Length: 488
View 1 (cartoon, rainbow, N blue to C red):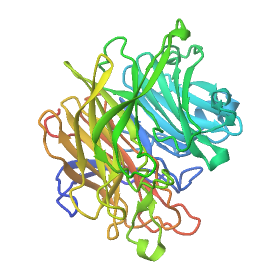
View 2 (spheres, one colour):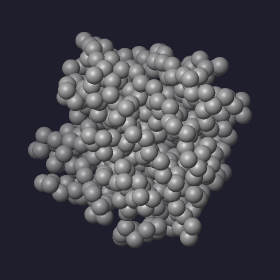
View 3 (cartoon, rainbow, N blue to C red):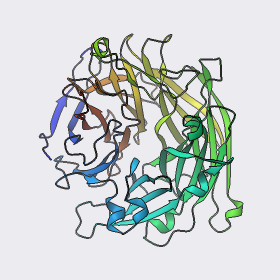
View 4 (cartoon, rainbow, N blue to C red):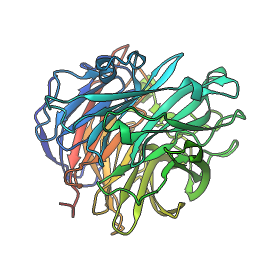
């Protein structure tokens, strides 16, 4: 894998980007060395104590945090941890993956959905925080999903899985899509995996799963996000895991003013006492989901590129759902939950912007404490955002951006919640090419915070340095990290 040298960049005010912030960045995985490159990249990853571990849809690679040097000679297939352990149910593909770093246990998590028509959810937990250790290895676990997916006389397709760390479990969510109705979303599943035993390599107790479904049309509260811990301070003992989902507009409407809260209390000693409650509506400022279609809520393809007038290709904003991660941080006197998504800034055809929310909970009752929208201009589309917060209350939101005059770019905005400061936008890299052969962009990205200083933000996303045409894949990914003012 060829890597450029680490770049130390002072971003200047370049329209439409107005902020100035020191950013260090280097190349991540690209299509040329992805063993199974596709059009839907789903770039995500997490920063650990010594390395950054990046994921694209079918592969992963580690990078030294200081030099940007790759850990392995080339990216490894997504199924590597499972094939190494002889877990045959988890070696056929490995899509829709997520990588996390468990801050409380200091271990890596790799999670993938596998199979078809027999589906599995597969989780690998590292035995150390050092990807280069001579003793590095994975503990691997699987859940047969078919019993969970067979509901209402339908064999649902499991899509868009997400996973998060919490003290009492690794929590996983899946969308239920109905293959008899064009993969219409009909519900959700939430499962708790036995984190206590998994982080030591012991046999896990059976996962506990709950479902919520309806066959009365589109399920408008889909794609649940489980709360994922930043920092090393856990939530108060006994705090149930919280989930959040969008509440898309009802039929005949284009706007909504609700999110949904769900809560999972797991009892490993007596599973019959476990509960999964929700959805509980939470009122937020009115929004229209990005590129939203009332007749087909998942048809969210409206983002233009510089070549759109010639190619007619518009890429997917993924505006019908909230975006990975639902970031949790425990402060000394309160707990903060952050989530984000893209919304329509004006009537159909005009640009998308980034909406963010801060939630807090009082004895399990959630409230909205802060919210805002990032859209400082009138033509630039911002989409697939991801949000996190450092130990001082600085917030960073990374996202893709594109317009009829700007190739798809990577940018972020930052602000401080306790000081109620205004967002400042920073360019990471502007691409020099467009995706002309597919409307499928990445379905999610990830902003994470370094566990060693609790200040340094790391963001990964995709871009192009030449037009991607025909049947080729030429996308690239870029890793960027930075420390915001006031954190040290």
